Image (cartoon, rainbow, N blue to C red; front, side):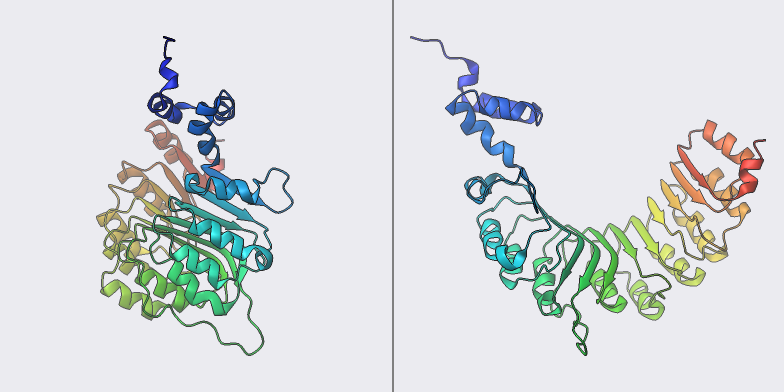
Length: 345
């Protein structure tokens, strides 16, 4: 009888699959019919459908390998023509984990959001430079309710004249959400955005970039802080002019922060005191680049007493401190003050 090669066994081929590169997979899938049955589905773990791209997989191919797709990306697609087909694709893909929408001018379809809501294994959803109708916002929030990661950047609601802003997500919670990014959102009020944060009890990372010159809803934020809604929060990025008092309250509630990006915050004496007490031993990344109240003494203290610090951005850094702490292992610093560079001369 003919000898059996180890590679004739599907178990062996499957075991080797994680070690193959994106260049290896097409070659392996072309070896034979048996090899194709093992490796062809892996070619579609990540799929992109891009407007005017000649490399888009055909609709029939997407449907054929739907259960193999783990990451799916759409960019510039006309959803008025394709929303039903895309909803059908998502419904047939029980293993989809990551979904991205980029540069979508009118991302509005109840059918689409219902399909996303029914995708039980979906863990992350990303929106970059998209717009949608306010009428679909409730279905959108429902579709996001079981995610672990939600990223919304440059989202615009297509508001008509005299139309009210959409209500807060009534009756919806985000019990699994751990990573939340909200940047340049037009048409959703800051209070509604804060409501999303308050409905995420196990949040670990928050990146919230408010419109230029927007004021943090301080009273509402203070009420949330008093309730200690985010016991797991370790990474915080706030791009707003939050006051020293409000930032102090935030830092008091956070436990062992690892990443703080607060470039426009008024990081003053109270914030500094809370930071040094609660976070100096665990902080790895700290950005206070444009803080008008940060002093050189504070910067020196931070550099002297944060043993895990890898990155620091501050308005003023002394040259002697840069030399000393670079030698001791600080990986990256950013300085804005000309006096710091002059200290090297």
